Length: 16
Image (spheres, helix red, strand yellow):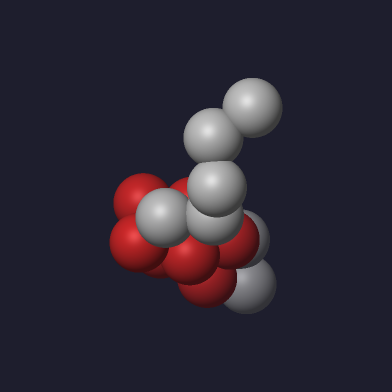
């Protein structure tokens, strides 16, 4: 399991 990266942050923000 990889740590929360910028990709994860952007992916989560894209789910708005």
